[in-house]
Amino acid sequence: SQTIHQWPATLVQPVGSPLSLECTVEGTSNPNLYWYRQAAGRGLQLLFYSVGIGQISSEVPQNLSASRPQDRQFILSSKKLLLSDSGFYLCATDRALEKLFFGSGTQLSVL
Amino acid sequence: DQQVKQNSPSLSVQEGRISILNCDYTNSMFDYFLWYKKYPAEGPTFLISISSIKDKNEDGRFTVFLNKSAKHLSLHIVPSQPGDSAVYFCAASPYGQNFVFGPGTRLSVLP
Image (cartoon, rainbow over all chains, first blue to last red; front, side, top):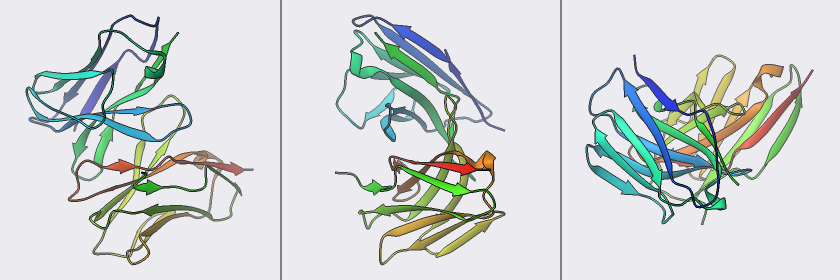
C-alpha cells in the first residue's frame, strides 16, 4: 500500500533563511503529488501539484517553489523565507479509494 | 473568492447526539466531494466521499448528503463520540483531481 514520508515534522527558521521540505512516496509509481498549506485558522490551500518528473504546476503566486527530481520525490523550497510562510505543510498523493492521501505534515514557524 | 465554504467555524455537540457539518460550493463543475478529519499536528485523514451521481453515501456512523441543486452537502455523525472532536474539511473537485478545500469546521463533542 502507499505510504508518504514527510520530514521534518517541525521546523523553526529565521526570516530570510532558505527552506527545503522533502516528501517521498512508496508503494506506487508515477503518482500525482501535491503540496498543501494550512495557515493558522485557515483551510487547506493547494500550492503545487505535479503529474510527473519535472512537471510542476503552481496554484497561487508565492514565495515558494517546488521540484520533482525523481518519480516519487517532491520538494518544496524557498530561497528566503517570509513571516507569512509560517504554516502546516502537507504533501499528498492520489489514492484510489480516498482520492487524496496526506502525509503527516511539517509545522513551519518563521520567526 | 471561496469556491468551497464551511460557514460554521466551530460546532459543539453532546456525546451521543448527532453532529451535522455543512458545506456549500459555488462551482457547478464540481462533481466529486470528500470529507476529511484532522487532528492538530497531523495530516488529514479521509472519512467519506460522494460523487454527483448520488445524493447519499453512508459508512458506519458517517453519512454524507449531497443536494446538487442547492450546491450543498452535509456530513452527519451519529452517535457523536468524544474521539470525533477534530477539524473537519469538506473538499470538492471536477473530475476527481485538484481538490479545493473549505476552511474547516472545528467539532467539539462534549462528554
